[in-house]
Image (cartoon, rainbow, N blue to C red):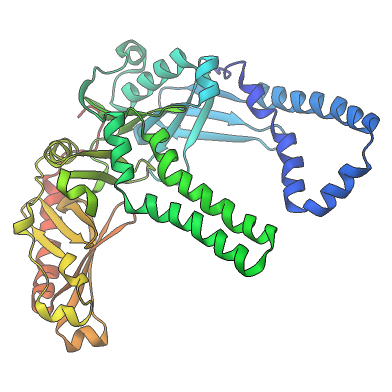
Length: 428
């Protein structure tokens, strides 16, 4: 049976006509200002009397013509007022379902479902459902994707979870203060507008430059703190669950078997405390952060949950490029390193902001060797490993003979890794 979204949904969609007017005003501010100066109180009241009912009607009609239904094999989402669109989402291709609650949605007791589906670049979503209904539907869809029968899937409920880690707010705040990007954007937001004012004395030029810089500074500091607040990682049969957010609350899942690359990022000022940030590349998913900050030992234990059988190579096992690589990248060549184990291809890069990328052999789609004229003269080459998430991990400035051997051996490791890898299934 087809079902409709929560009755508060029209309030969310009623803003579309207002957004059109605001967009027109921003696109041509001079014309908008001239039109506003001509308006009288009577014209303004008439405009509001027309705009508010029109917005309400638009919100109601878009809600009325939106339905969803769960069949034995797929989730159907039917939308569109003038142009109809029906999305047929095969249940076995669902790899993650996130539950998000913006601030106003939390107040209203509703939630949004975002679905990661294999082979699609954009998430389909159901916004909004009642908070309880959203979690029940998520559990049912995941149970169907795991292979449970339709008549029993709705009785399975949400899989139990065991908490692995919770990032304290104080640790998160200190980590942001010790990040160079935070201070760099704040410094740029303070210095660049001041220099422009001294050079031009034009207020509009200063504002056009200052506002994006202030926004970037806020996003890299306060914005990240609000978004990553109360970051919690839990383990369940359907993957690692991540809950976070101070104002907008998000409930995400890292699907098992779909992680292509794990990166351990270590800024310079974090190294004394042995903190790292763990980032992910997941095939067909936008989930990119596993841990915003954590002690290295705990981070490595969580990585072992994401990539079973993979251990993070210690620093001494990562071999640097030969000394002649300094002619290509003076000083910075010391930040590169490489380690190849039975389970993973590990490449390190960066000197001030070190990043160690781990690619399981089973996730390698192709291997390439590149060598420009200057590097041919120095007998150096780069080895690129392409993954299923359309991302590339590169071992740079390797000895040419070592790179050629790595190119040959990595193809065999990838073939045997895919043969022995477990299936990418929910609750496998």
